[in-house]
Amino acid sequence: MQRTDTEIRGAKNSRTARNTQNDDSRSRKATGNKPSSNRAANRGTGARKNRKGAAAVSITGPDLDQDRPHHPFSPSWLQSGEACPCYRSRDSKHERTIAGTIAHKASEKQEDDNRLSDDDALAVAECLDFYDSRVAEVRAMSNDLVEGAETYLPIDDLVFPDCEATTAGYADKWLYAPSSRYAEIIDWKFGMWPVEAASNNLQGMAYAMGIFRKFPDVEKVRVFFKQPLLKYITDHTFTRADLSAIYLRIQTIVARARIARAKALAGDWSDAKPAYPLCNFCDNLGKCEKVLEFACEVGHKFHPLGIPADITPSLIQDAQNTKLAMELASTLKVWCDAFKRQVNDRVIRGDAVVPEGYGLQTMQKREMVDLSVYKKTALAYLSKREFEDCLDTTFSAVEKKIAAKAPRGAKESTVQEFQVAAATAGATKLGEPFSFLKVKSEKPKTSEPVNQ
Image (cartoon, rainbow, N blue to C red; front, side, top):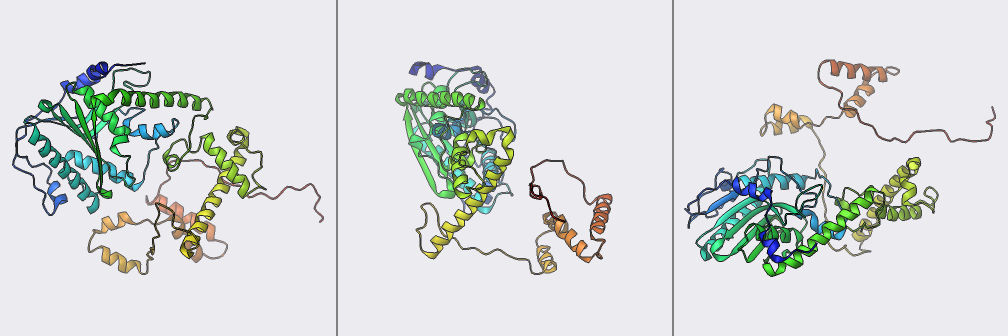
């Protein structure tokens, strides 16, 4: 479906209209906001200091603590979706993902959060200082300024069965100078993977389209991506002349993904394009047949006696071949671990070069020597309850010691007696049940009679 530049500029849907009506607009005056030597602590006071210059209107979107609509083909997905139309992002519990979420909330609320490390808190302060510098520069060239944060920015008014708009998302910060017909978008990235350059960054392009659509008089949108932990910043200025090409590119990516997802649901993964490190973050990793093709090939070469040569993704996915599937997964894990150890050893010996993007790192794991002394030292920093909350006592470690002290013939019953006593006292309880596959120890079958 073709759309003209005029249609893209002027199109608005009911969601945008509702956001505009509910904008929490307020005036803000200035007194200057100079970065201090302790920027993280300064930012943690809970309120931004007012800045010098003319009053500005501020528009904020929904709070990050609230549930908000998430587009199935969001701007942050587009770059990965272009690489592989079958890509689906996976919810991550990685510590950097969690820290990034907390950092985004801290930057939105402009308040410190004690859960952040000093480096992450400083990164938030650096982002907010950068935002202040952009406000000052834009205000210097325009006497009117509108500031926005976490505003929902759809790129068009198309309606699909599962969503509205081809794509839409929330930009961290944006600035709009009506008299200059100019706008800026600032997006923070607190991860350790460098983002695509702004000139080719599809997330930035989608946000820019959203701003062009929201403000039909804007002629230029400058997009910034700032990654403080990497000391990296990239920016690019988009114009209305770029809109047609950007819109076609985004529409193509989303249309291909819709087709690929429908085919994948029907068992056809022919549109998938496996790539590193994209597959590492994809929710389809265990289902994608294109990845399975590679896994089958590696599995047979590494363990030809256990993994047949005629193994195929369809065979692995067959409901009657779950045993073969589990054997393949176990084989691949062993191969991967062994191969990584081999490469690591070769590099350490000097027989191979350090892979690009990697670096040799030496570390030592700590061992507990005296728990009582450790506890005494920790209690100088923590309360007794805080210290006890940190203890990760495993059932197996305690029960092994109880069994070791129990007399021969009563070890199992003594452990069971302890388990009942701990549960009765309220020290333990059963969690939610879960199921998993476990290899059974079975005697090998034989057709030959056993001589007695």
